[in-house]
Structures are given as C-alpha cells and as structure tokens.
Image (tube, rainbow, N blue to C red; front, side, top):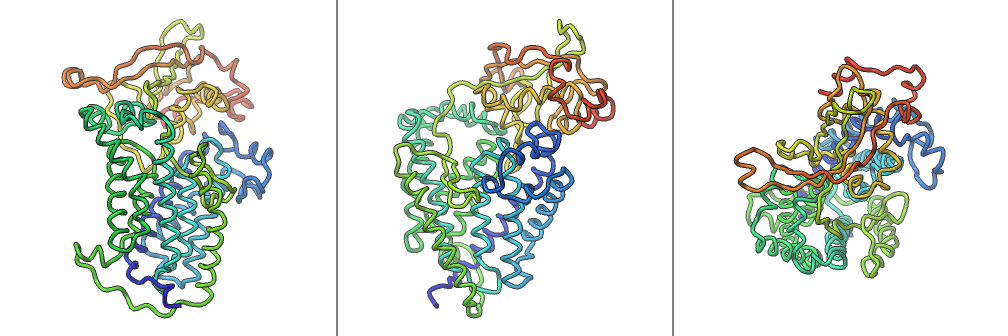
Length: 499
C-alpha cells in the first residue's frame, strides 16, 4: 500500500521517539528515587496494601504478581536504562519487530508503576506518557518509512491535549473568559519556576494578551493539525511556541515537553527544509504486510476507544485528565479549568521540646515555596511528587488526609527515605519530639522588596493546619521497622536526608 508510507516524516519520527524516550527515562528516574517513602512497602500509601484491596483487572501491572521494594527498584532502573538506550538510538540498531517489542516493554513497565501509584501518580502527564508511548511502538524504526496512520494518531492525541485544555478553560473559571486568569496563575500555580515572579509582574494588558493568545492556540490552532502541509507545520510551530512559554513560566513535569514532541511529529521535512538544510528522506524498502496489519488494527482500536473522549469534549460536564480504561489509552486531557486567587502553603515544623512550647524549626522542601528569600527553582521535566501534593494539601485538607499524618510520623523518626525527598532536615542529629503544620497565605513580593531585601515571597499566617503531635500519637503510622524496634534513627540517617 503506497499510501501507507510517509518517508517525508522520517526526521519527525526520529525527534519524537528520541524525546519521548528521554521523558520515559525521567519518569523512571523519578520513580526510582522517590517510591520508597511514597508507595514502598513502608511508604505512606504502600503498594501491598493497594494491591490487596484493588484487583488486577482494575489496575493491571506487574506488581499484582509480586511486590517488594527491590522488585520496584529493579523495574524502575531497568526502565531508565532501556529508555536511555532508546534515546541513544537502540531502536534503529535492531530489527523492526525488536524495536516494537522494546517500546512495548517500556510501556508495560511504566504502566505497572502508574497503576499502583495511587494519588502520587494521578496526573494527566502520566496518562499522556503512556498513551504516547503505546503509539510510539507502532511508528516503526529506521528499517521502514513512518506510517501515515501512526502519524495521524499522534495528531489526534495532540488535538485532544490542546483542544481539551482550551475547552475546560472556556467552560470553567470565568476569569478565562474575562481574560484575567493570569493576574493570579503565575503566583498560585502548583510549583512556580525561577521566572514565575517576573511573569506575574508583567503588565496586566500583556496578561490579557497571553490569555487571548492561549484561547486561539488551544481552541482554533489544533484544527490546523489536520490541514495539508505546510498548514499542519504552522499549527505545530504555534503550539510549540506556546508550550515553550509554559516551560519558562512554571514547573509542569514533562507535560509541556511531551506536547512539544507530539507537535514536532507533525512537521514534515519539506516544510522544515524551507528553513533548515536537511538531507533527502532515506530510500526505505517496502513495508512488511504484518506491520501494516498491526498499524491498521491499532487505528481501528483507537477509533473505537475515541468515542468516550470525543463525547467528553462535546459534553457540558467535561472532565479533564481522565482515563476511560485501565491501560490509559485514548484519554481525556485538560489543565487549569479553575485558577486559585490565593496561594496557600503548608509549612511543617518540628521542635525538640516534648512540651511543644517553643523551639519550632521548619522543614524545607526542594521545590515548593517555603523560605521567603529562596528563589523558586526549575525542576521540570523532573517531577517532585511530594511537593506537588503539598500544594493540593494546602487547598484541601481532605485531599491530604490519606497520607499527611503518615508524613508527619516519618519525620518523627527521621525516616531516611522521607528525608531524601526534602531539601533540609532541621533535626539531623536526633528526631524532633513533636511536629506540627501551619497554613500560610503566600504572595509574591513587589519590585522594591525583592531589590532591597532579596525576598521573593511574603506570607501571613492563616491558621494551624495540624496541631502539634508526638510519636506517641502517630506511632501507628510510622514505618514498621521503627515501630517494631522502637528505634528513632538520627545521626547519619538524618544527615543523609538533609543533604
């Protein structure tokens, strides 16, 4: 079938697959470095407890067969090494069937992690990585020309990401329709980046232009992806520019970079060659019949599964970042249907005094705002899961109820796995006697405050978020090893966490 092959997209496939593999690697790295405290055997939301409660058919993956922290670590590091190899070009060094199998292995490994990740993995970029990763397995490698149908499926995915995000904004918070949401968003987003302060202080008329441009790019431009070239390339470039703007203004894990990868898959060498010196497409052999049959079957599967997200796009009760099946295929996407006007932050403090009558010192997180004079850092595309959930905890205590007290219990025993997720442990030699949490209203400072006092934030105490508590009250939530031995590790373990 001559129409099946699209050799003019050889570079687009190469860029998409390499960038996707890099993002896979980052996802596996984040899982390997953070899982023990979050979902490990003695974590805040342990996988064994989850798999005992939720059957395989509702959360398919390898960990229903067997779970231990060593097995999870092996899955994460194996995924990281394989993803790095694919980013380096392994997929083009092996036969077509082997490349497809390697992409499938990456998908199965990451699906297994996401499906037991619970609230720590309940984000749209997890499903987006899985859906894009599944489609990548059917794009082929250097042995054959890119399949037209596979490229159209990537555009359909990108359309749902962008158009879904545009609709959820237009139907959601009134500030999107009034063009005023960016008066607040840069300050109140989950994890501001190093330029967010400056974005927040842009003139309000420019904020209106930003919102209006966002509506155009998300509600109009996605239809251009289905135009003949160079129309599709123009749409892809506009989406890419918008995503780079988002990369500069905040930390949204790999959401923006994966959207960019999807957009670049719509750029053909003919359009790109008008601006860049590119070689001619390789001379590919005929596409194997078995491969054509698999891509056709995939296209039919996606067409059937598209019924639910398409209906969701048309619904007045549109949901965002929702998977209609346990395999995270053909999902609904969207972001920031509502925007917070006020930024709340939870600060956790500890004291060495058993009475709790003073001596409180704050724990510092890596990414979320805390110390007033510390400039926000850039972490994306790496994802700090605990920091993100702390943003939700400040908005809704009920959202954090399943894990927040368990977090406090781990701080009371200087749990090294938990302390590794933090930037600074104020009790490196001996655990605190009591811990508490306070809720603050945070605001970006003005130009004069930043210039004269080097403070990026100012804050006002709102209330006590969690009253002072000691190990006698939270011991049942501490890691089992600490409960069994009665040991309260300090010293070296605390110092490792502080670093």
